[in-house]
Amino acid sequence: MTNLFWLSDAQWAAIAPHLPMKHTGPRRVDDRRVLSGIVHVLRSGCRWRDCPAEYGPHTTVYNRFNRWSGRGVWARLLEALARVEGADALLADSSLVKAHRSAAGGKGGSRRRRSDARGVGARPKSMPLPTSKAGRASFS
Image (cartoon, rainbow, N blue to C red):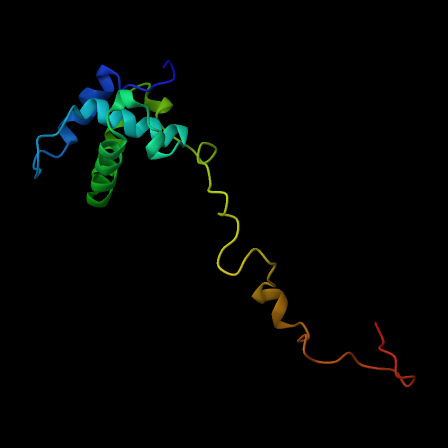
């Protein structure tokens, strides 16, 4: 697959000292491969399950990202990567982020709501319209 992302030697040298050394459980697999997979998923916006097999099992890639996010490791790694020359290709902006198809509406749907600023001076909807002498509503 030609669209895979791999950390360069300079990028790896910058982030290697910031990797956590204390860990429980089995011995970690190739960190460079897994971290490259995490960056690939974040840049491409694909699901963790769709992570290419070249980066290792998708559960390993996701679990590493999830655990390290909670501990603040990613903040340190990204700061170190930002200092590397030519690392601007790593940085993602909002144009790369994909939203879920139901992200547009929150709880209660996507109906329009009046802002508080407009609603303060407005007449409540429950009040009847003023009527003229003929008994018809006047719209003035």
